[in-house]
Length: 125
Image (cartoon, rainbow, N blue to C red; front, side, top):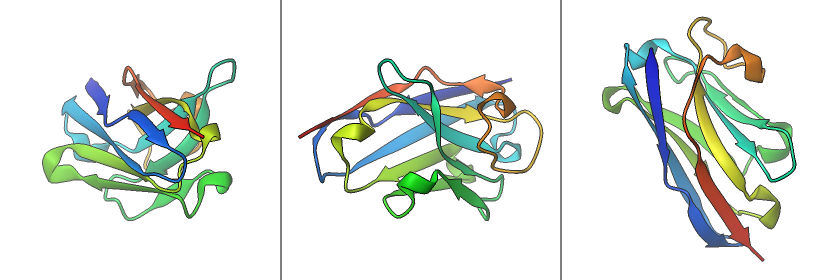
């Protein structure tokens, strides 16, 4: 079992930045691929970014490349999502998730076995 807790969300003006954190506890964190997803009101949950166990391989939603950066610190059992040049359409609840098995930072939502409760990000225009 892996327990995940997101933090760092909040209200920011368009063009601003936020850094989200995903703190993990439970089994050895460094063995898990971690992904970030988001869900806006009335929309399906969508993939944002994912990172391999070592941090050497990352994957991003095409529309977010260049603005969002995922990283991890296995010594701190934490994964980060740096979000720059935020837009109102980035408003959503952001979730981190962990894969029980597998080494690829996949985009597939159903490949992730453990989920956090989410953190709200609101970008005002």
